[in-house]
Structures are given as C-alpha cells and as structure tokens.
Image: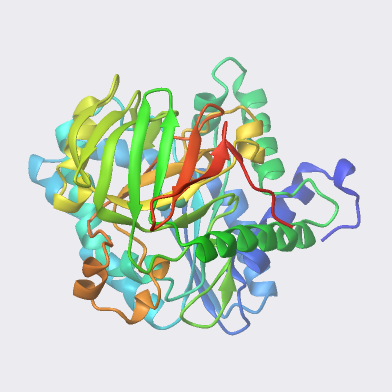
Length: 420
Ligand code: ZN
Ligand code: ZN
C-alpha cells in the first residue's frame, strides 16, 4: 500500500487498494487458506492484483475461473438445442468440495448487463435453470455462509457503456472505475478503518430491528401498497458476518443494506420496482407485481416481460419472497444517481425484496434447522434468488408490531429514527 493521500492516488494505487480491501476486509482471508476466484477475461487486471494480495496475506493457493463473453455468445449462435438444458455439474460439485474444505470464495462482478438481451428468452431461461440446478449444492454453502466469501466489482468497457451511454468508451470506463472506488470507500484516507466504522453502523441498525421484532412491514409509495410479514424467529443482519469456518467477512462490497427473511406466505398487495433489473444478461424494466397469500398472482414488466414470467415460473418458490432489505435513500450509491444495471450496486442503492431462496442465516439458529423447520418458520425455498429494487425518495415504511401498532421506520426513503 502506498503512502499517497486519498486525493492524489493514481489509478494503479486505487486498484491495489481495492484488491487489498477485498482480501483483508471482504474475505478476511487467513494465512493457509485457499482462494477460489471467478472473473471474466475483461477483469484480468483486478484479478491479478487480488491474486497478489491474497498470496501476500498467506493464501496457499489461488485458483481463478474465467468466463468470456464471446464464448457465451457463441453458444447461443452455434450450439445445438440440447445445449441449453446443460450445465457443468462436475465443475459446481468441485466448487462445493472446495468450500467444504474451507476454501474462501471471491467473485469479481463485471458482467455486461445486456449481453444476452438479443438472445432467445426461452433458451436463456432454460440455460439459467440448468445452471441454477447444477450450482445449488455449492450455492447453498455460500448462502448459509459456511465459508468466508465476498463479491467486488471490476469495471469493463461493456458495463461502462451501459451505465454511461453518452460518453466515449474511455471516459465511460474511467467514470465507472471512479464510481466503484468511491462507493467501496477506496477514495478515503484509510479505507480499512472507514469500512470498520461503516460495518459497526449497519450492525447497530440490525440490532435495533432485532429488538423491535416487528411482525410485518408496510410499504407505501407510488405504485406500491404492500404489507410483508416477517418470518417467525427472523433475524436482521447487516455488514459483516462470522462464517461457519469462524472467519469474519463482509460478503458484499459495497454493502449498505440490513436484511432479513420475510414469511413466504405473508405478502399482500401491489409492489412496483423503482429500478430496472438486470437478470443474467437480460434487462427487465417497469416490474409491477401483485401478491396474495405470499404468492405473485399478477406480474407485469414494460420490458423483458417474458424473462420475468420464465423467472417466476422456475419453481413454486420463485413466486414468493426470500429476502427483504432496507437501505436509506442517502446511501452513497443512491447519491451517485447512477443505475449500475448490476445487483451488487443497485440493491445497495435502494430498499429491496428478493424472489426465491431465503438466507437461513436470517432465521435464529437457522444453520441448525432442517429444511422442514425453516419452512415452518416461513423461510422460502427456490432455485433462484433475485433482488429487485422498490425503494425511492418517495417510499414510506412502517414497522407493524405483533400487537398491530404501526411505527414509522422510513419516511421519504430515510430512516425515521436516528441511532447512536
Ligand atoms: Zn439484499
Ligand atoms: Zn439478495
């Protein structure tokens, strides 16, 4: 790490800092651990710096799996039809085996949000389903935090073009990197210290909600009139987590949310998304759904309706909610005013809900409960977990106590109660 102050760091110094913060704060990587990283071929630069930082932190082996956009598109152009029901199960089984052996996991998120926009939605849906199914055993270890893991972002030309469509490719790429550096607190004098203060704030907010033990949340905003019950024994989390292997990690960089498990049978009313959703290379815009008894009974989108329909038809749990998260509208990501077309950023810009799989860590003693016991508390089960943003500067949220009293939680997108 260099000695230059926050304002005068070069791009190269910032990239090194991002890699260092990802390894030290994000992963909390311990000497003697292995690391498994995934990235696209566009993120070689960041992946190499993370590799260096991981070895310097004592990693015994860093293994990186690269994906390539051109190869992904070639499949849609030239592969036989049966290709779209296939996934490399052997590879995902290998990932699961690595996690069971305590290997840490880092994902660089850098995907072109529109990569598959022009491909056949039917094929995209089948391919996603096959992949979700094959990935499930490995993903399950991630969602219940068996190991330390984190996701960081790397800017790429295609992603930058989606976020800054009116700039030249070079300017757009520079702007996206700057947005990544500022939202991940790399542009501060001491990013590691900055992260620990931020983490403490999120932990305080989650503790406040856990004391309140609201039975449900009520949302009111433009196009949204919605009541969402929380799971029995639900637990609010935010910031870092101590993983099953005992290592403290911050799974998302950036992260601004506190989140918990809603009750899968207790969602009623209409919800309108406040941001477009980029799902596996397809854009879904203008989402509006109606819930009854926890289940989506009507779903509309102004763009990507077919993909949305395929998504909620994945399985029974895909029509129900597995996560609810609160994010103040003043979060640095919302303040940037940008739509990133990337869930890691957009979900931290706004309060959101997620279709599909619940996090068992968001239920008290959830890691010790059987799937049946989790389901009995209202935790949802699905192959998918897709976040979509419903927060805005016009959203009001009340917490409803077990006795039915409404208490203001958020007003115009901001916390109604200050915590110290
Ligand atoms: Zn979330
Ligand atoms: Zn989520």
